[in-house]
Length: 335
Image (tube, rainbow, N blue to C red; front, top):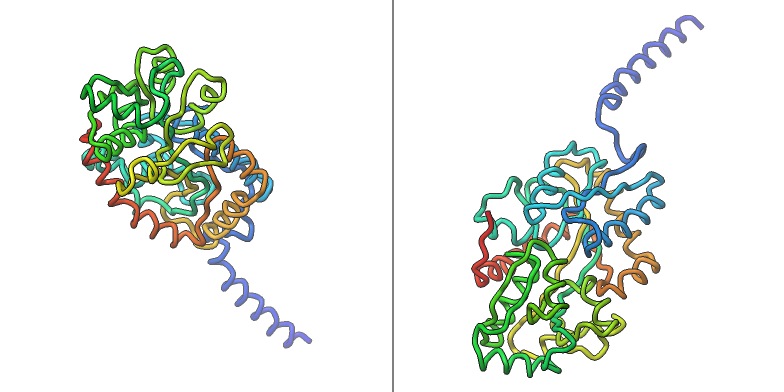
């Protein structure tokens, strides 16, 4: 018995020695998460990104069994929040609501001077929503449809004005692509955010707005703005109030204009593969819940997911050249 006990003891010591390195490694998905997760949003509260993040956060919290806390860090076109996440510990407890402009356009918008590498500094998990832009004018304007608006722009080049949420935003890029496609010149008036731009269109101080649907659609529904077009190739008939608003494939056939932008869930580079897999699975599960779609659709967004982090990474790489071309055509440069 003693001899046998000695053998068992040595075996136990050996197993303990083999297990020791595992105890020293970072926590893996089996015990992840054990505390709340921070989801950093690169824009101020109330916009499309913030709404998407809060809808995702609620559903991911239920799936993961830990709270997902949304934290807004606006500024510098999303670069401030992106850098914060890129420099965070790769433990899965700090996530980012990424997007098309941040990962595909900002490097060119800022002349290469951004404090992170969109591909090397992130673990890209999956897209979670996709939306488009909406061209709207004041309801008291004389233009009843897109053709009349374009005719007026051609008649007096540069006389019409578009208020935007800022240089290099999806609003600015949508205008630039439309002008190029339609052969018109409209004066771009950038504001410091969407709210003042929207207010000037509502007051009649600016002629048009071409921005994300969520902020504009309430004013279309209450009759203060008139929707003339959506920026995507196809109509977004699933949005109440926009059922009869044409897309760019109808209005500017052959132009290839299709202004769709997306939001995603991402983490810092270096996430353990099993933690990344756990987060990807939770992200996709949340985005496929029926009530997520029900909440997104009236705002002009649809759920979208990627089958794996690797697939999403390839998607970003494939999309980047088109966004770079949009930036170059717009002439936008940011400091």
